[in-house]
Image 1 (cartoon, rainbow, N blue to C red):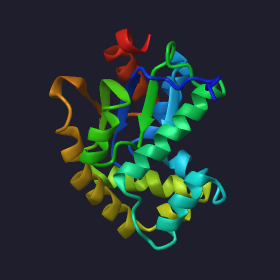
Image 2: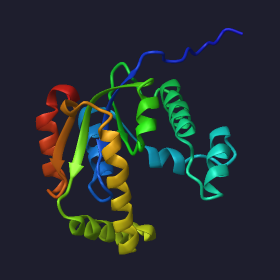
Image 3: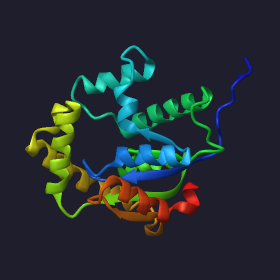
Image 4: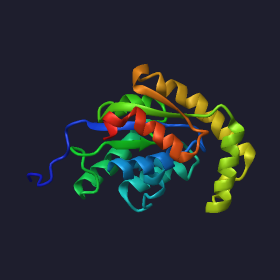
Length: 204
């Protein structure tokens, strides 16, 4: 039977947002989606929102229930399925909007697979010289949002070390000229100002 809804074949124009826990990736993604009418997509939102009864949810939960990481190929497949759903239901318009990706790719292999689906325009890299600043931010957020997984300092510092170990190889996959670095220790609106100033041509 002929498909009524054809799948998008062109690569999606993407901006990647990288930064350690507490650097404000989600905050900046939301700001930029509002300011420039782009689509912010957090990988955490995708996987947390999967119904255990859906095909993707069954696969994801089969790994998660055993404490295993979802393989890179399946991670990107679930991501792609989700994005196609956004397009099919008129929530994301790839011809008009950039997709702001937060939390994906997490490994070099994911970045290699993702190349089949997206054309990375720029990479926003939120950096902090002080882990202490980020730890205090996360603890404050844990209290406000009742995110108790963010209240254990030992766990937080471990997550930051894992981020550093995983992210450096991922960034090495992309040309240095695509990476734009920002000081995550500034106030969120100051970071937003710097991003808009540097990337105005792409984001406008």
